[in-house]
Length: 106
Length: 287
Image (cartoon, rainbow over all chains, first blue to last red; front, side):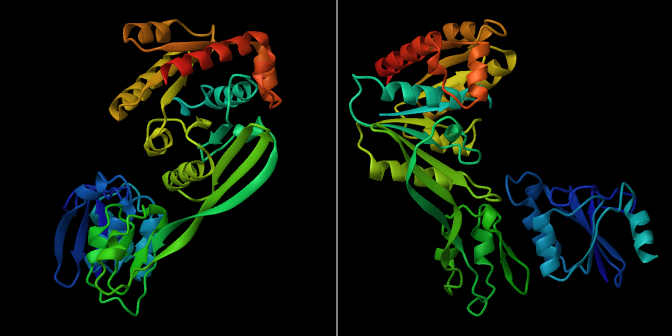
């Protein structure tokens, strides 16, 4: 399974970002390969419009099965993610990626 | 002649000045031709609260947005890449369109090699055309609830004015507040922009933003102070120091507020009528 976290940094101790469309970036965790990778969201963070759409598209292109954010998904981001059939987990809170991952696994 | 009434700050008295000025001018003997009050604050038009008349015409307004034809699409992703407003999302199995983000630029539609994104009409609001008296007309455009973009409807309203009225007719445009796209569209072909402010620190701060905007647009503009008597004299000093024409001061009066609260015009008050007259004479001189 591939899990994407909206995150403020690229390692397990980084915090889950409470924003989605304008998150600092996205961390992709590929469970099979046990690999963590960082994907900056800088271009959307500064976008005037449609940050949610772009961020959603990015998560889709990363091939996520599940996407996690600390707060809520915006309506447009949610539409994109839903259309791609990805499971959304909002409200992870201000926790580290490790903590969020452990919680999901439970 | 087109005069736009604008402001940086909201709630300073754009509508108050626009409705009273238009009504006043329409009653003048030396004004020939029609006077048209135009409410271009399409997100929340309120001139109509102060001015009543007979509805002559109502038109539903549309804008063009792309429609995705899945059967024709080869998923080349050109459309999503070319959209400056992130209004399209490619998600592997389909292309999603977000009409609320679309600026009707046609780029995706024109550049699609498969003709899979034809443009279709999407309702955005309504324009209403009223006759108030023999020589006073009123045009009001109103965006539908949930429509995010004001500019296309303001553009349509300008086009309507062009088709219905002569150059010589006097158009008084009640603009949206602020300094962003809707204001810029509303004032774009005005001969003069009248910036309404109140004599307070907030009023001055936002007036400066509006002045910067007008300078950037290379627009001729002048300032009117509403609720003169409250606050301080910083706005006047700012206008004087920067060589900006201050063409009138509408006094703060309890009676004016009472009339306003009942949806009535303030030119019933002599003191205010005289000031509106002065503002009008100054506009004629400046435009």
